[in-house]
Image 1: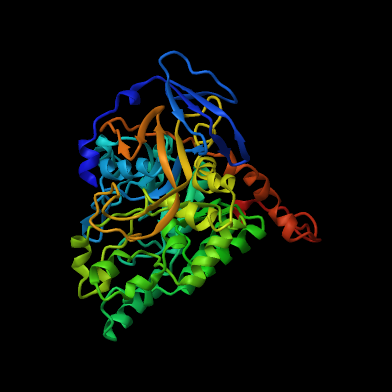
Image 2 (image 1 turned 60 degrees about the vertical axis):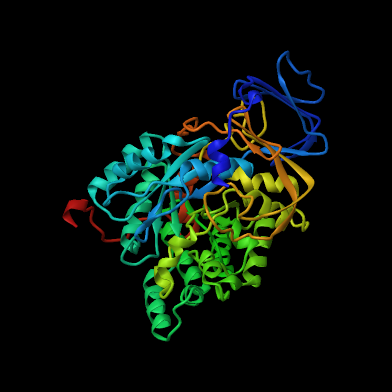
Length: 512
């Protein structure tokens, strides 16, 4: 619980400059091998068999365990101002929970203040003063002006290389196609990544009103009024707009078969599109939104909503097949008292579920233990791909000499049960209550320090670091200029353009 995080003392071994992880199986996205890992002053110094521990080093026994890169959660909302409230999970409680679950880096959303991007970052900087691990920001774009375009450039210069556009939440965060096109073009100019929340906000607003007017006022109305085909429509539209602007695109929280299919189609044309699934989508269904206990039902309200088993299995298979590329959480933690404001109107229930602590365990149980993916795939989906997409690789996302010493050690045989009674979040409820998992993060090393071991947290408020991310990430921008230069000749292979025709006179553009 939160009290454990606040009262935890820094264990003596947490300050050791040398750590040797001995006897484990090191897993990277490319494969796995038996090896020891030597850490010095927050950096991985060596990865090889039979390393000898330096004098005074802390030795961590990893026999029979997997040693993996610390998780990178690309999608979180800590202390997030939304729907008239602020999410209950702070940087201290949320990051403490993350470390207990093997995640050592996350990227949070710094919402603008009255459209001012830099004011939003300053506000988020204040909220992150008690951070206990590495983090960075995405910045949402909710309106358009020359000032916004200018601020985007300044923000990229400060080490933030991603901007989000909401196609949902009409009357609040939603943007139209014209703004989305402007924003995409600006992202490409700056070498930033355009991100979209894909839902048709206009249609959802209508469906919400119709659903409410029909007498359906509880949490089930949330699911009913946000059908999967509206997620698919908006996702497909965003991908097509990105095709027009030749801009790399990242689709957040893919929750449906339809949205996944649009991403597959986009990638099949050569578009640079990435699809993010959240842990809740592969670990939960929408069934609990029909629970007679409002507290339980409301806890499961998220947008896009959780879906049925068919969608859940389709998303698991899409991740396993490489059709969707990484797993985040969309962690936006609300206490049950906050969710209660929508007791008689589902439209008022603050949207969001947690998962920053549970993500790796849910992935292990639903993807690895079911045989859908190998441990190396698990690393790619939970850490490496995010590191590459957001230009953190190879600082993060890999266990290699010279990389940051952010590591999780997983005991594949240890069984445990997810519960609000044992999680380290500040929340009073868990959407994963009672989920049994075989495979547990038993040790987490962050910034070269042991911060989670033997079910004990050792965190130091204020030790968190903002991690700068440079623009033009090679993983997403390599080939963009070439595609833009060649697309006309590839789609219309009839000769050079503009076509020269008999009788045409040379005319300057200013004369046209």
